[in-house]
Amino acid sequence: MHSYGLLGWPLTHSYSQEIHRRLADYSYTYFEVPPDAFQEFMSQRPFRAINVTRPYKEKVVPFLDGMDEGARACGSVNVIINRGDKLYGYNTDVLGLEEGIRQAGFSLAGKSALILGTGGSSKTSDFVLDKLGAGRVRKVSRTGRQGALTYQEAIEKGKNVDFLINTTPVGTAPDPMDRLPISPAAFPKLQGIYDLVYNPLRTPLVIEGEKRGVPSAGGFYMLVLQAFYSAQLFLGQKLDRDRADQIFRDLLAEKRNIVLTGMPASGKSTVGRFLAWKMGRKLVDTDRLIEEGTGRHVSELFLKEGEEALRDWESRVIAGLRLETGLVISTGGGSILREENRDTLRANGLVYFLDRPVEELFSTYRRPLTPNRRAMEDRYQERVDLYRLADVRLDIRSLESDQVAELIVEDWSKRTQRGGCLDS
Image (cartoon, rainbow, N blue to C red; front, side):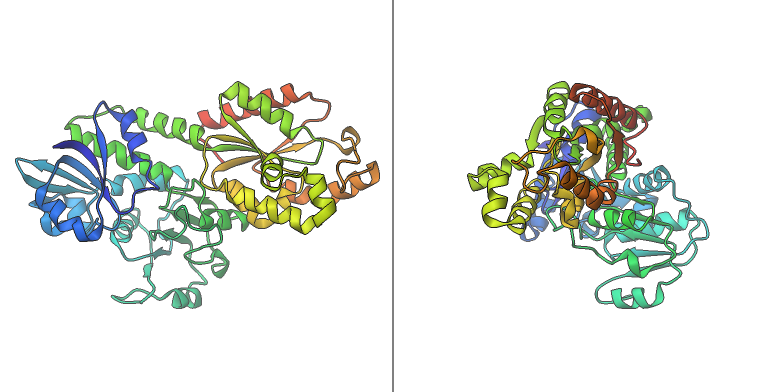
């Protein structure tokens, strides 16, 4: 019998193994059980205790011999303890979501909210919002059954909605970055978005909310906290609560990419090499990936096939990095011109704009779009507002590449220590 693990289908997006490995000294297995094998798995009970994720949080309930108050109230279970071959269900998602909402700085007392989805996580969210004193809360589903609004009805009736809570899997990697459960644009009075999806670190819904100036948070902190409270149930003992926050900070820092944007000749590639060396990370240079894919220097590709062909290749290689984590990514000067690229780089990355003044950038015939100082100035003016959409703008006037790398390491360290904040 395995000791502990996670039951779900599929589990390719899960970070639970990494979290539990840091929480305690026990083996944690992925039980990736397809629907047609679920009943047999629950009958065999090959575990001491497990976490449960979609699509089984409600489906496990008939197999249980008892549930705690939270699980019973929600009708949804994410922890099962096997005691003497009797199964008992718990819901640590309740505590995880409560703490996740607080960590995001959201106050829902008296506020209206839409819960997207009607599965087990939506029931947990409904329970938590009630505990937090939310006002009018409605659920949203594709069918509109059991009193839920359809998505179209939610858009039509949601002009005064204060919060969106996404409990659907929409936006989970590898979903495309333009796939949203619903558009925040339909809700002009939104005060916050909480997406229970945690992979990518910033989901399409979170990114869309940020673009509109709406405070938005993904579910990674909730994931760590529900795992912490699960581990306490597994072991039957209290664990150091500060450890959960430290694991969150450490994992977020390890997984989040460092993305360098800025003008041609601003030093991104060299800074990237220094950063990769200092931080023990892999460096990915998008221009080099284009050259490997085409067998041509990017300037040759531009001259022979045109700018659109170069931008298409740029989008292709950036899309190929969408699921990668823990990298230093140096981008081409024009990579930010397409919104799809900006969104993809932000999904798992903290984006730095290396803002070097034009007079310190040198032109060269090998850069067809910036062959002289005048062209360089024109490109800067055309792009600067897009560069400034980065999470962090660094004024690197008169700084050498190694100094810029040190500046980024210092900034990165500060953000990690205060909880991985994404603010600029």
